Image 1 (tube, rainbow, N blue to C red):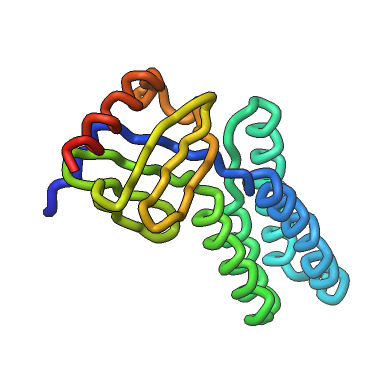
Image 2 (cartoon, rainbow, N blue to C red):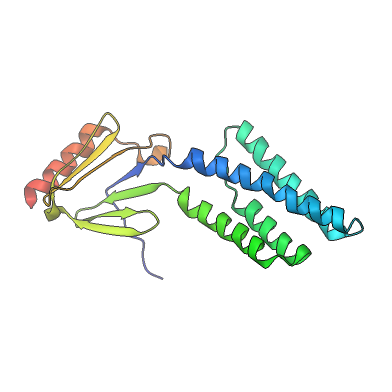
Length: 187
């Protein structure tokens, strides 16, 4: 098994899409009640339709309770459950697959972007991974929770950091800036 790369510093960037993703998850969850209700209306004796409605309602209540407790919520399990339920109960393959894709997409889109700084390179991990060499940069710094990476090709990357993400990575800006200054002077 390959050994995980260790970074001297890891900066977690804010994900500004979380609110939109959460609203979309709630909207899709409530919209799923319509086809489930139609299945119950068309076949009132179908036990599976009632079971699907019960499971979806329980998962929605669980997510709502987690939201009230200020926990980070994800709709992956709920949307996949809806998708598989719609496929198995109604045979509606297209709608079921769309719900499964929405659940998987929510998982990837709601994750934060992390930038790892090590002696050899800088690695940005998100949906895709991008690697930068220190020699590609003019300057890197954090000021007022804003990470700025100034590239030699006149590209500028600026993004706010997410201080609440993990206390393990909590480092003073001056310490991080001094580390980056030293690395850039070596190049």
